[in-house]
Length: 260
Image 1 (cartoon, one colour):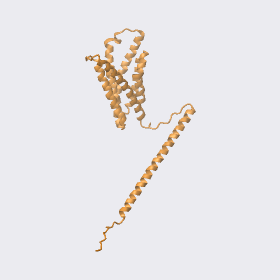
Image 2: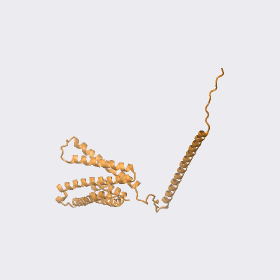
Image 3: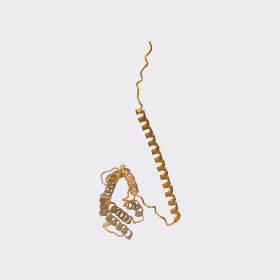
Image 4: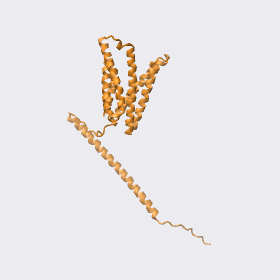
């Protein structure tokens, strides 16, 4: 449906990119991650048009990823050009931050809308929670980065808070995308045939597990049906007893007169 591409692309662009940056290929990781997310959102907008806003916000990020790739190559080949340093790099950083926030707001809003349509309240609630965390991170980052005269005592704590919020934001979004991939599917994909493996041993294990699971479901179904049947029979008997009691004649009990 598209959530799988969104999940993998997000993992590459925002988590594995940290490792790739240490190897000097952070820009290529961003390009791959943004590309996969863009493809996932292209498929998702077929089911909910609101995902188109998230897709559009990725196009500037793809251009910035190309710029990051060029910066990595400049580091390797020792290219000395003002476009890779100084004021231009700072402008690119701020533009990237703005579109990252827009991307998250658009995607989380679309997920909430789709989840509300499907009555998946836990996913809708998680999308709202993650939106609040992203907004809080953006506000704290602005306070931290802009020259607002923060004291040297407060700034380290604010930087630590930003690191914790960033990690929390990434993990919660990954869990949200995983929940979407698990609980939301296109029509006709509700029941997927189990995958057949090359090794027959794994197929036999999977078949045995499916048979045991099916037997357990049937047994549980029979127990529930038996309980409901016994409860209905008991209620019917109680109703019959009440009807029979109502049909019995009622007499006024006269007191015996005492003999004088």
